[in-house]
Amino acid sequence: MIERQQWIGPDDHTSRRLRMQTLVRLRWLAVGGQLLTVLIVAFWLKFPLPLIESFVLIGTLAVANLFMALRYPPTYRLEPPAAFALLSLDLLQLSALLFITGGLANPFSVLVSVPVIISFASQPIRYSLALIGLAMVCISVLAFSPFELPWYPGNDMTVHTVMLFGTWCAIASTMAFAAFYAYRVSSEAAQLADALAATELVMQREQHLTQLDGLAAAAAHELGTPLATISVVAKEMERALIHDDRFHEDVLLLRSQSDRCRDILRRLTTLSAEDEAHMRQLPLSSLIEEVMAPHREFGIKMELVERSGRDGEPIGNRNPGILYGLGNLIENAVDYAREKVTVTVEHNRDKVLIVIEDDGAGYAPEILARIGEPYVTKRQSDERAGGLGLGLFIAKTLLERSGARLTFGNRPGMEAGARVAIEWPRAVMEAHPAK
Image 1 (cartoon, helix red, strand yellow):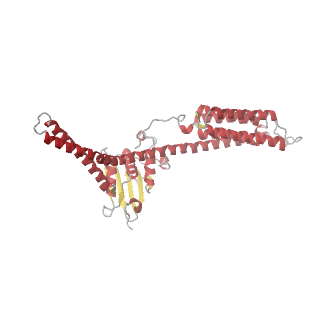
Image 2: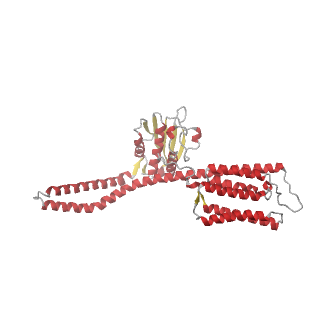
Image 3: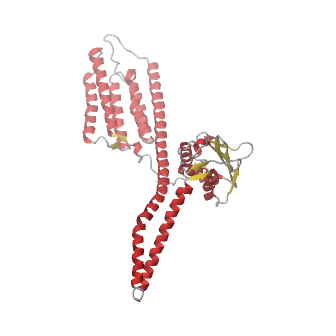
């Protein structure tokens, strides 16, 4: 199981800090779009438009954006309160521009939802909810704008109240739906990124443990030569001082300790050689015993069922991902079992199948549909599921990377309990597949 890490609040997570360069570029896009629209409406279509007020509002946004671009480096990330303030300013500036150009009758009024969508995609939920509340107030005020929509001179462009109400409903529903969708997508992406980072951390730890064998062998090799020299010198000193009572015992101690060091280095070298020669590859039965062994001392009966026997069993390379993934699934079964966990192993010429079953309550229906996703525990309401909910995700990810296909479910029939089936093509599982 992955270790519980320090909780990071939503405001402290770096993914919830808007990058200054991103906001500056979006604002320049808004400035350019607003200025181009005003110029086309006023000078090409020749609609009556409050030009001075419009240019003042657009210029205010441009000056504020220029100040932000010069004041802060492009890589600076805004804290949620600062991002909320800037997005609120953008929302109010756009609403003011729409207010003097027809209010909700203006076809560009739907752009009010843009700052809200940006907030829900990148900011903590409480700031985003406050911003969407402000946006609702803005579109409600726009519905009562006294300014007419710029139109051809001499032709009155009157929008019926029912049409304005329909526009208000359309903008509000679009904003709410798009905001909810953006928030869900960004949250799931952040969870997946964190979970994958935890998976990589587990793999790095396993790799570091593997590298220790090589370091031990290198240390034994490097220390062997100087230690041999010390041993030779100690023997010569013993012969020369054999009749000297003052140093004879010290020389004997020096030689015995050097011999002890040589024995320790010899054992290290032997262990490393054994690991390389015998432990690099594992028969399937040895792999299962290795992952089951640490979980036999918790008061839960562990039963191994080998349906195909051990004749002709596959022999695969030692894979830390498979060992960790299977161990995590067995640990979950032990945690939720009442009395017994059964591991069934089956193999033939085409596949290798491992089934892990426990006699606990099984998977809840609402959890079963999302099993293997980050931060989903086996029993959301169970106090024993007090971890981060990354264990099953990491196990599933590691085993699928090894070529396995996992199936989560509950035991069939009247028997209660969870069931996980892990299946590999035999050619993938075996170190030297038969041809």
